[in-house]
Length: 261
Image (cartoon, rainbow, N blue to C red; front, side, top):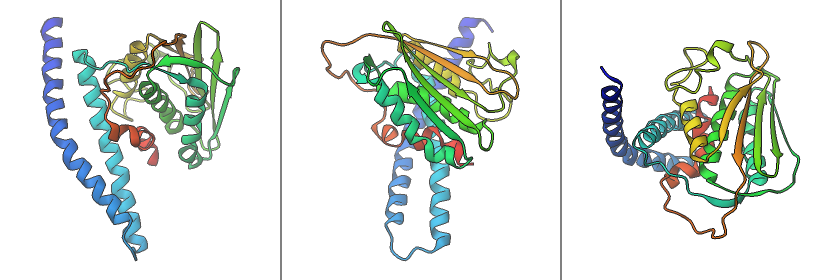
């Protein structure tokens, strides 16, 4: 099969998957609504509450798979476009660091955030950047050690911004460094679908940035460095959104769903 035929075959597959996903989202929304109603019920037993939480956790995991495949389909077709708006990137990154704390606490992982500026307004897609950071931070929790640490550092270089995410986890074999952003490749050959980091690099590219892996070896943790250009919009008008509002409302729980286990 030629490269062209292979790419066309992939595109047809993802178009089919996207149609299936569209049909799945409606019953998934109904399931979630009913779970919320159940949580409001009176006189729930401890077993009832545990069962509801188990269903909810697995619902988040399914939604992550659905969203990943949907985004890969949109990326393949070139229809996933950034919604660029001015935002305070320091506040955004610090908020994400705070939001992952409850997940990190389950392994007694310490989350550290620091920035060389207290405020920095740049034009970017807030939802895409959240998705990028949460995906990387999910890996930092999943592959970290009990009592480990995650260091999130934002550096303002005037013309560009860098976000460093460094952990004290199991690290990565150097032979995977050049492959890890490829679709379906995982650093351990077993955990995860291998889609997450391929989406990360595509989202970073859509934001006109770059991402690299620095200082990774087995047993010494991993550091990702995201570089984003500095720019501002004179007109802060919203463009058409292609992300699902329902997804955005639950983004932390969905992106970190694997860290429930």
